[in-house]
Image: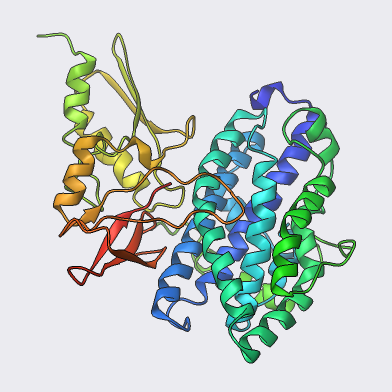
Length: 257
Length: 161
């Protein structure tokens, strides 16, 4: 299926999903890059730099798909919007905070994203299915890494465990937003672009995670996501990050690397 | 003048090195998805190894520069039509990786099992399997760090993806 074969309402819903996914990856990539040079271990400095680079690469590929679908320039979509026009999930409005917090956020994000990518792997929209196939192979490394870190903090003594539990309690409601807040997902299911509605993907994700949370004695999710999952209200922390990542472009829109 | 054949194009492609690991070519790494010759037009499609690899444009340009002039119209593009996986690295490519101190990747990871398998590697220096994973992530997106317990040296593995 090509872009021309999509009805207008389906195309609009697909554009909304692509922008939400791209913004998720983009903003998480920038938060994780904040650990470069100051991670608690040299290995994690390297790992988080790689994770961040992967996410920003995925965002670039998704912005490119969006530009092919709706017109426009991928860089302009990535850097040219005001903070309230970003569509990332509220999970990514939180700052880097401490190591346990960053680990908890990545763990919740990566496992939710894996469920989302699963639901797009057989997408009838072939350009998206191709990018997703590639992303899934790379995300396998992220999952492996984050499962290992959650295990390590959860079983690593009183302080790491307490910090991890506190971070998860704080993040759970907003984590549900990764699989919410996209209009028209039912239309995408009907058109074969997405395997099932996001609420069903969310249930699948949580069911898969439950045994691990129980085994490690970690907090369970609330029943439903909060309102305003994907903006337009944005935290001051995100506004600060936006200032950082748009700085070069705002000072010289014609700059090239 | 002799007519250009696909074999000529593959031969030229085999001379284009990977910018990060120059001992292997784009053909060794299995980056070439398609070579199409149609009258005056030569079209080559390449597969990105890692979506966020900063060398992608560099690779595309090196290939375009090497092929320039071989046909009146030369197009080189990246495509996600099929996912590149490390299983595409050729036997020659694996040999060359080992000679330059990189462990070749094992079979690509099964996708998204609950806890994926941890990668293992054979030391490229002494051939021992007595090795430990040090870090899943390394100096570039495509590399993982290992330690050899036999010859007591660190080494890198090209990621199995």
